[in-house]
Image (cartoon, rainbow, N blue to C red; front, top):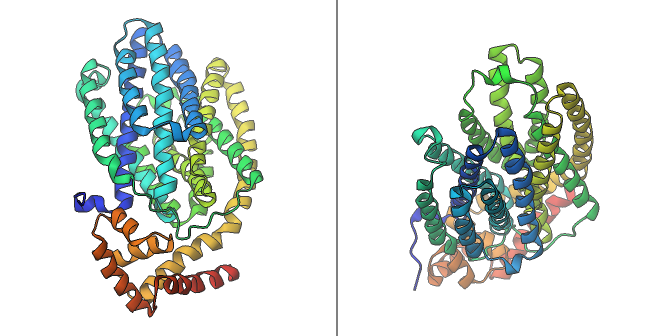
Length: 453
């Protein structure tokens, strides 16, 4: 019996983007509700330390637990436990209860995030990972913003928001089965060796980038923010996420360079904080470019994980990002009364981050640029040369990933006879006699191009 799904959901990237959006909407909205509840129970500084300090460290722990024990942590179980723990975290009248259950919620948010980052590496091809992640995060950011509008945020911080979270769980329950067929992330199914040196360099760079970015948000700019609505930041952030996804898929190098440029914006804001127009432009750019930063750390490790076929490493970027965010929060609170020291410390860390980023850029992006571009270009040239339709291209990608007709049919939600029909057309258009002949012809087109770089 064939599973019937809407036509739009037959696209693997669309399914994954919607799933990421629902997952992030659920976790981010619950986190915001918990933060608002903390503000009702304690002062703002304490709420920041609990939510962005201890909370982010718990999210990092949840991501680490997923990486360590992925096979034992089911997505359904983590999502259900998250919903259960959210109830006392959001309705508890004592600060201790709200903190304890809130930290459990953050731990489970990390586990849920580990699942969707794993899917990003395992189910989405490299040329679409940026947009799938950026669009998913952007859509959920706007949705969370809209949820905060009723009652000027009172609805989001009330217990009446709990049915919304149950509805999100129901949506995830319906969409998750559509992701089960493993379709392979890359055009080829051959794992590449993972360089320990490059992995350590990527970890150190993302950790420092996150630390500097978080500290930059705490620069003295009260006069800048006075005329700005922080809710509007989510719109700019969502736009930045989508833009970052598009740019990153077109060129990993350009996406990385935009991420590095984002680190300088807080320093520029500091210099122009007395100029309202310039300050607003910089403030907008800060959130736009923060989208590049979010996409960068997710896609960087998704690419690393997919190439090595070690998909559990995909959440490592967000894990390190959360650690950097937490440490940055603690440092900002500690230096809140010494603004000069805060700026000076951030600048020194900024220099170290730029150095590590430069080394990472040289090690990861410059040697692989020709290869990444060649794989995309060769596939497109091959498809255009043989006049392949959109569906035939999807089938070809899965054939190159060494999937059987039955697996391809299950992945594309069509019958096996339909796949045989497309295979017949593929072989006819390419002049091949068999599936192995087709794979050999494509390999002959791919590898000489890679040797030339």
